[in-house]
Image (cartoon, rainbow, N blue to C red; front, top):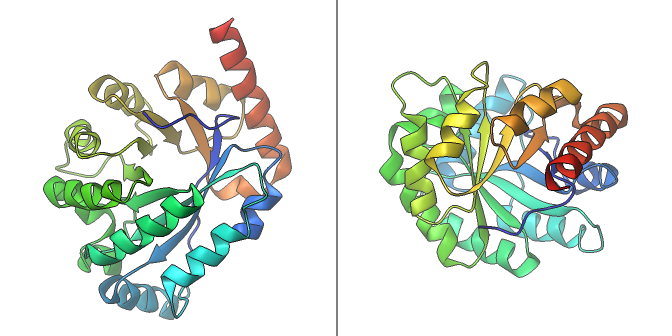
Length: 250
């Protein structure tokens, strides 16, 4: 299992917004930050351009690998552990990004979460939840680079056996499952019981009540999404997380 980050609070990626400056600004409150998401190959970059055309924000650097290398270098003196959330329909860019993450001690997070139609049609995002063997192959390629690997997944996708998907990903080498529970908070417990991994729970994390609910269900950490640029929310979440683990480990 990957070495836990401290505090047990992560920042969840926000496409087009989650960069090194965003992570650095939250370093007093979070132990990890997932930058991105970054579209890596031509299929997902074409999908990202379509998303931008309908006024969604996306990172579209000319060279995704060089961009990520620079972003990680910018966090080299920060206490926060960085991760990079990536979307790819093909394997070679995942291998290249894994090499960069390994060199910087960063987490490579494979996105099986994005539900935008364009990204799913390209073979990335939550389409991977319906093809767990292909997701597992992405995990294997990423893990072979030596980087710590996270898989970002989503609950409530029709026809998807999420515990089985998570189990296959962990068996293939994933260290972290980053679970967006949607409105199925108890799915955190189901996935925790089905896998031996570091489980990060996401969705609606704002205060002591939401933190305690996820941790009691078996999460090892929580992550904050949209309010990740609000210090007052992050401060509440960190206090609640620190207090919970202090009591449990006492």
